[in-house]
Length: 446
Image (cartoon, rainbow, N blue to C red; front, side):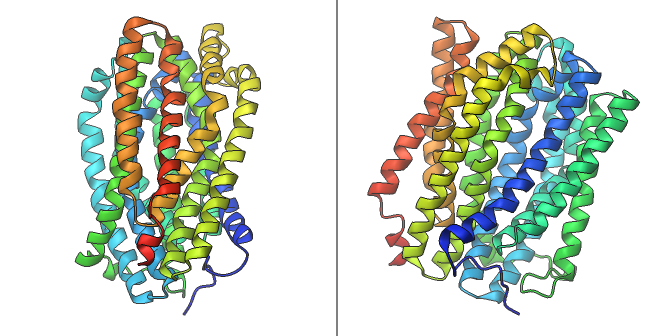
């Protein structure tokens, strides 16, 4: 049975926007329940607990980002065969993706639970925060399998053009997470470990709902448990396209761990204030994330269908929408940051650090959007190594080098903050030159 979710026909703006809106709303709810941990912890358990939770974000993304980035390769493979209407390979790619996700989830559990204390020590996590941060990290990674399968299942549905059902599951997951956060820490004050437990339980319920959808559908992407196994040829494609994306996420995270380590040196107030900022900055990522994912699926399906002119027009439209939306959010964050930080913690020092970071970075969200969505376009075209090399050179090597030298010369936290807009801008210039000069589209056509 053919699916009606294809992005290869109809108005390009309409198809992209209708596909992106549910992902935007879904990511909005995901951001809300990610923020719920920090809001509840910051208001009920204090700024030290808030610092413990928010300071682990870069470490979590370091490990989760690698596996989820690698899983993006599966989405590209599925979308390409779906666009080409090769439904037998769609089926095999989906079951290979699930098998790959199970293995990745188990590996992530071991890495996160065993090595979390050592990594937090290397990050220079202060003593007054360390124990709570270890508890939060270990509980979070104990549920790694649910985290990975949650993203794999969502990715399968989005790859075949279904962004509505992931939205429903994210809304459900968000509500459950917030209610559990309020119960565990708003009512019983059980501690930061239970904030992580609330996240794991809510994602587990979403995995159940998503798998139920995949197993009961009569469409071409139906999942059968007995068919979950590796297909060697398709696994090779998934790894070839996805591994660069995973490495890209990891190198960005390594650089962000270095940034976090420098922030940690300024004490728990800086950790709490900057942690609150990063949670708020997540909202600027919403249009970036949804258009990046939409572009990967759109480009993959249309290249699979050999619709090259449509592919190019869609890329231009998607990048433009993301850049505009991200900058509008940046302006809002710049002017309303004091009121936003107070939602997490009203300590004047905490607020001061959060506002300072926002005033340094917020006006540069448009270049952040350009880099990420362009990476999504290239990933959909099978050129995932290009953004990987750019991010490795600029967002990792240059960012770490800049921080190492600049903070030695000027030991001020704002110098650390400038690492982000500088590297966002440089990577955008490089990727723009590549899009204009390189043979990324017609090379595929030949």
